[in-house]
Image (cartoon, rainbow, N blue to C red; front, side, top):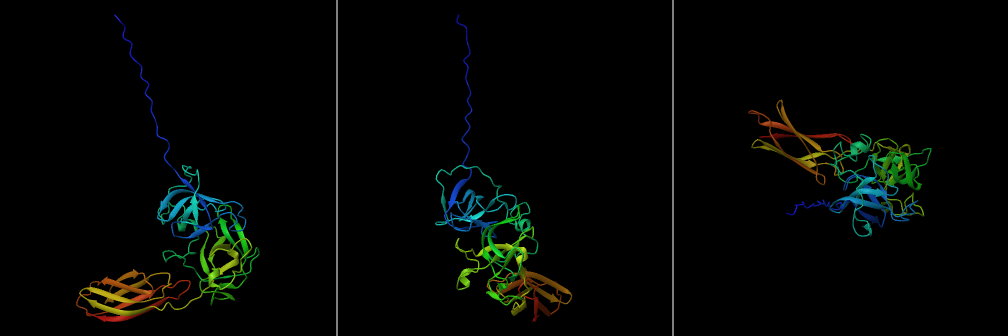
Length: 335
């Protein structure tokens, strides 16, 4: 009788190769890096020689793609905002290209969080000084400002590192007195010049100053490439100026019918905040804040408990900002 010998089977567990992580893209030009897709500029990435002190070409390890925007780790002089070198860049031809052999590079950035979440390290409230920036007003909103004399020189820089408090990619200096046209102490400039935000540490300010609106060379141009439209200056070299004018707030139409109050009017298209519209009948009132669209605002309010009252008042108010004074307008309506 043959003795039964059990066969031995080797169970081999085969694990799949690690899934594709990030993919490396190489920059082909000077590119803005932003804290969120389409939001604030927080620095630059470069191709070789496209700015001062750029002897190599930068790249980004892309983890997330959202439409034309790409998010990931940005290699190069771009700084470590929110504790890491991560940000959003706009893709497209002539801006960047996939790097040969750059597939499956490790993820080095946290997953991008909601733009406004306190848990997002790149949320504006986490990286900018409180009250130093206008938010939710459309891209590129700036405060009136002027360059002033300062000890270290009012140089333009493409990058600032909040972790080390250092500036890099240095262009030329802007002259004192350059600023928003009409502002106090402004001797040269134009209406589009302005202050975008101050960094949370108080050391740097991002400003807007576009050469194309000047009709000539930018004051900070150097042989190393033209200064970008957005750049950093030391905070002691610039100050905001109170250029207050009327926002042109008015009520064009107002009516009260069927338990609803409707009103519309105008306000300056570049106003920072919404128009607060209040309807009052006796001691009762109801309010709503609305945004304008190209300078035109409108509102539809449900009336409060007005009883048998036939008369009321519609009041529109604007609280004022760094460019416009506060203003109020009112109109009587009849049911």
